[in-house]
Length: 410
Image (cartoon, rainbow, N blue to C red):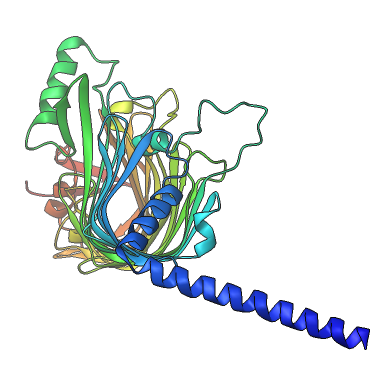
């Protein structure tokens, strides 16, 4: 009898607890849909998303939604302490795990950014990139305190009509004379410069632009300043990329990008340009260059392209002297080396009007033009096609290779 009574009391107690929890959830759900609830969601969301912003400030003009369904944010801005923008967005939708509001690790299951503007820069006088400064560790924390890594995880992220701008310090070659450096500065600031360079307070900056960016990212791990860095999986992305002055239309891409300390690693097996399909992988170094590298030429490249179907007109943003009327297949490596940039083509089979070239060919473009690893078979060959690819044209009227003399009119 006593046991049955205890069971009944326990059952009633559990039922009361479950009913209380259900009523509490219902009340919170109703409150979260009211104006007061929206203000509560806004404060909690800002507090959660603002974790770890020791060098920046997050602002949201308005918020809609509730704690259980996510939130729609309007007028989003994330700026550094000087008020310089890192991220601006007309609006954003976040679908998150409600537990993330209480955890140092933010987990967003789905996010959509509408017309975002992202500005990544390291200007003259800055010791860190702006995003590194914004998410830097709290300097007031004791070294003896166990550090909790501030990480933002996104299952999926959609970007609609985004703009990304990357700016870094540019300097003339310090090994040149003062007059030569002035000439290099003038050339870099001219409208015909290969790179986009502008004068700012304290020096010069180089700019790279990515416009009309649309796509979907997944398994995003944003953790600047941590040992493992940030990682992004690109499911689909298209944009107009202006890495050099001449932009290139990226119609579709898929791959993985890792943002690590001082460099970027990427492996993108699918890159679709206007008339080309290729794969690329490599490293782009943005800081901590070797002694021989001139920071004025930053970033530093070690990049490989592989393709069975390439239109060289799609690669003129890399090297403006590639012939527009050439096509074929090849493996192309681009590497920053002492003395210039190396272009090394392997297993090439390239056709242009009046020309069919197969084999391997390398050249290093810098203060002087060097050829390397040349093993080519040309049948036939039009000298004018080869000449257009060289920075200064053919150095001689006739070339003697293996006892065969090849001559051509200018």
